[in-house]
Image (cartoon, rainbow, N blue to C red; front, side, top):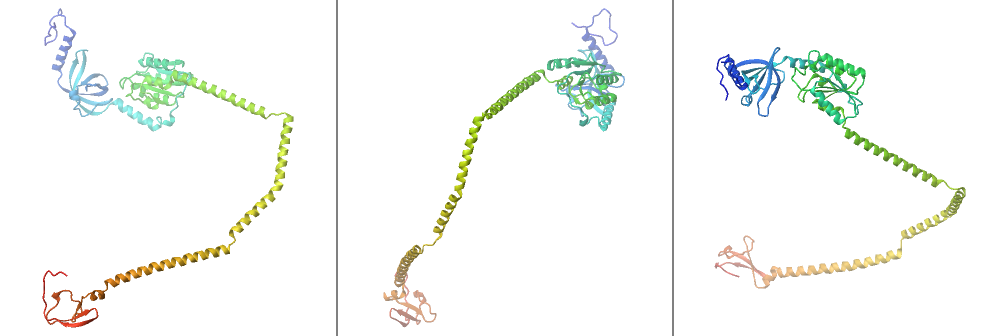
Length: 458
């Protein structure tokens, strides 16, 4: 059971034992009554956004700093997200985080008033060195593929040193490691790091240097934004890998170094090839060397066999020469007979072509007579077909002739006035004169009477 504290200070009695939670709670009440909601200005440092959506950061000036928290309910409506080094104003109340007894500001609103002094200095120096060409790719040195020794420039008390040593012992335990101790934080740290880099270059004990330090705020890492250190890194004969801070931390040393690693552990991985990979490569190269040596021995043995095969005794050589002479003599004899044989063959071909091209008059005459007979027969058959067609057409014309119609007892009436044939009784009228054409003549007729009958069928 806890004891309630009075609202006034000091406490009631020295004999009362007060739990820490009650003390912190009372301090929180006192702070809430004493400090109202106010605007507070400062430079942002160590800004983080939790998975829950809350913002945690610190604001500071030249003399002090204080932690801040902005809960998700307020942060989701904020007009800006603070960045490292920004100069901002927060509208907040002073409170205490009771579980740890830490003083903090509960931020309700944030507004941007400009970038902080340190960040402005960082950007100014970065622009200056970039203009001078200290960040160009052409100036960067390549890292050795298999360094004989690796140097580490850091503080012996730095937690990053332990991570780097563990990584190197795991990946390349055969490579010697030299630690160049120096300060990595404080007013004199930059000059000490510059001195150590110069010492490492003069001694030439290593093939590559790792400049490393763990993460921190912009003030903690400010030594690596020093201009003298940047120029010392750029003028170093030894290639330098920068492994300063976390992945999101950028310093001037990162830009001037030959390569920037996101973390100290990553820097150790960049300068060291895995021992297992090297052993595997060694085995592969040994196998390739052994295979190449074996193939060379086989080629040399084959060449030796070829030379031994060409090495023959004098007697066998003379026998081969005699055999060659016999073959040459035979080809010589055959060469003398070849022109006459070729001439006879050409003559035979000429006679054959002449015979094929000479005309056969009897055969051509016989062929012409045969064609004439075929033509006569074809013309006769053609005339018969045409006569038959003419007869058939004449018969059809005869059957369709008007004279034939008149001979069957019909007559054709022609109007004398118009000269046209009369086809219907409606064209006739009493007193009209027409000509009646009959099979054997014609007669002029005067129409006395016209009788019309409907539906006559003829």
